[in-house]
Amino acid sequence: MEDFLTGKKHVHFIGIGGSGMYPLAQILHSKGFYLTGSDNNETETLKAVRNMGIPVYMGQRAENIEGADLIVYTAAIMSDNPELIAAKASGVKTVERCELLGLVTSWYNKAVCVSGTHGKTTTSSMLTHMYLAQNVDLSTVIGGKLKAIGGSGRAGSSDVMVCEACEFSNTFLHLKKNSRTKEKQKAHRKQLRLRQQLQHL
Image (cartoon, rainbow, N blue to C red):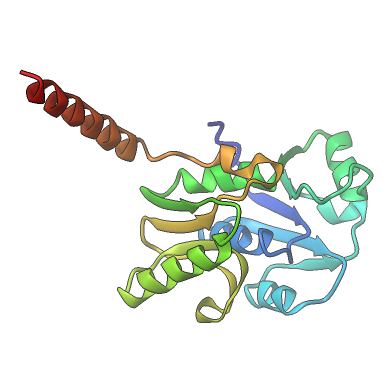
């Protein structure tokens, strides 16, 4: 997986008030990145973004991306968006939200990614509550607002992350698999095969 954040200092979010963008902004902000963002409507989420000290531009204009060396956008952003056009014209790196989420999940040794047709937000919220009840300082990315964390996301200091593995725009295909979990699965399958072989002796 390409680490497109290496060497980047200023990250600009197009649509920073979105439920999927806000948690990523929280996490990057906690890692020391300088962030800016833009959106079209004032919301409680934008107030929370500003409270973190992140400048937010109302309306999307080419000049909003000035100084940024990475642009993050969602699949909902149209190709004629002036900030996206300006970024591509200037050669600034642009990544879709799902790509950034995939990279962020690779930072956590215990990333729990919840997929499914229905119930992703509910399940992710329940898992977040369970971890918090055990005093785990987790990071989380949820597709809805959770009262316990005051919104749709949380930036923690532990190696635990809970996020929704949404199928929209093939987001779940970008998420990082835990290699240690894969090795455990391989070892478990090997043990099952050995047991089956012994049963036939």
